[in-house]
Image 1 (cartoon, one colour):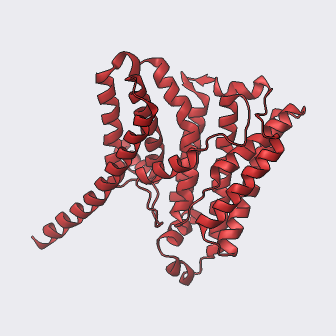
Image 2 (image 1 turned 120 degrees about the horizontal axis):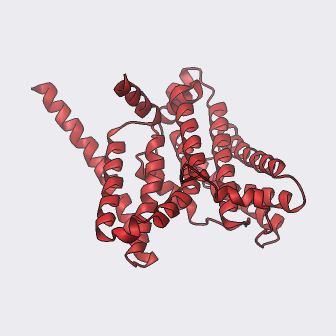
Length: 331
């Protein structure tokens, strides 16, 4: 039945009360700014801007959320994205094919993720310290490789990826949806996803269950690195070049979006659809405020207020739901 299929899809992508609250907030943002300034906010140009700006942020947030699922964090994900973009740009500007450059970028991202996974999983370095250190390392490598400048002159076959549309929607937005669907299936439908959730929710129980926690963490950070590499390619395609310093604010933004989506920082829960919607909601909020000629500082304040509001709603909503459930059982 269609309703059952939708329920199954929702569970696969992540369904919880926090997801519903986030969906309501996203719709409210569209309605409010659509009423305040419909000619600008609802224009095709503004909506296309949101579609172009959301993919890189959403994919980086998914990478962050995956590590948070295992009660970790990846502060190096933006550095991985920049290093991957620089590697691809250098290969292309030195006469290599676009396909080989893409493989080089993904290979670089996987290697960076493996370094993080080895440090966190096998050497038991706290994730925040391990990825903070490797983030500096990867940024330094990108800086040296690029010579401290923007690597330009990328072939049109690569840069037009950010300009191509399919059914009126930018190709990179479709890429984001495909990546999110793959992550959702891995988390909800595979043994690895089950182990990741268990490691995050109760590592002691995971150990007694025979789960090799180090392998799970290695796989998690490799996946996070791969997502960072994809985001780096999207950033380079949109910018028309690669730099070691792109997206400096994306690390904090990725954490904010993951928490906004209801991802549990202590591990065990991840809603993929929530992360994607939160990333789009943040872009819609920024675009809506800018359409009202509000300064970028006010945009940052409003994004912070939105995060605080959602955290409070999730906290109080969960507590109230538990209270009402206990009262119904007593009755």
